[in-house]
Image 1 (cartoon, rainbow, N blue to C red):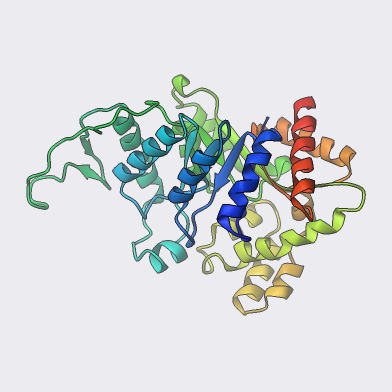
Image 2: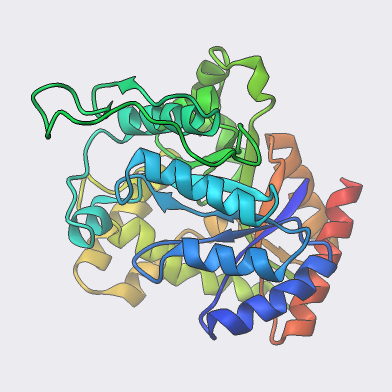
Amino acid sequence: MRIGMALNYAGGFKETVEELADFEKAGLDIVFVAEAYSFDAVSQMGFIAARTERLEIASGILPIYSRTPTLLAMTAAGLDFVSEGRFTLGIGASGPQVIEGFHGVPYNAPLGRTREIIDICRKVWRRERLQHEGKHYSLPLPEGQGTGLGKPLKIINHPVRPDIPILVAAIGPKNVELTAEIANGWEPIFYVPEKAGEVWGASLEAGRSRRDPALGELDIVGQAPLAIGDDVKGFLEFGRPMAALYIGGMGAKGKNFYNDLCRRYGWEKEAEEIQDLYLDGKKDEAAAKVPQELLEKMSLIGPESHIRERLAALKESGVTTLNVTPIAGDHKSRLALIEKIKELAAEV
């Protein structure tokens, strides 16, 4: 099981990357760099590539709507080049609030677009003359659109790899099925290993039944906050505000994927209460309604014996990469957590 970490740069990006070299030495395998409506992730991943030697670097995630498919492919090839083959292209649909609100682009057909984007990216990396006729993208533009001067081109540079790994963030049944069929990796949010089979098992099986064997096994990335000790249970409460934000506030009623997931996990009543309270501006009350079991099951927080049990459950459910958020008061203690979880994961 690989150990990854989401980059948290609230204290300053350059300062965080300086510390990242220590995490690399401590055994961290991969770092995930987010792009929401903050600084772009690409410039930051290039900076990380220059300051690290072994660490894999993943976008976590680049939204599929804010760049053309070809630009996503070019960006991935460029980052793979400057990192000497250490890049993973993490993509996802994000949500209508960000895509339509911040980017001004219609949020439509996420599944169809994802399939076509992945196909186009792989054509670019193989240095094919780019021709694609899809429902959502046509390359070159067809007759009657544009100037009519577009020609099939291939990327000038030779990519380091013609098969850069593609990771898709997905939680909806059809999106998970698509991911299992065509992507290299899958990253769900709020991952509860005991409920994963019930919620996503059929989708994963259906996608895998059409999967090209050349893709290899699907890398499943489980996320979890991390704290190890006999006195750390209180850290579970740190997850309440974020869970409430996503379950309650990331979308309108009927258009919130995270709320849907909470319902599919079996917490229909709580999901409705959280959303009603959050949308009514009662964020603290909404956070208080987040099920304690959800916080516990999607976390690695507790004594070492508990962490071992949770790691076994994650592995049993199919997780192959563990994306942790180490919770500690200082850099040295966070490093120690990465070293320890690396050791424990190797024993599972």
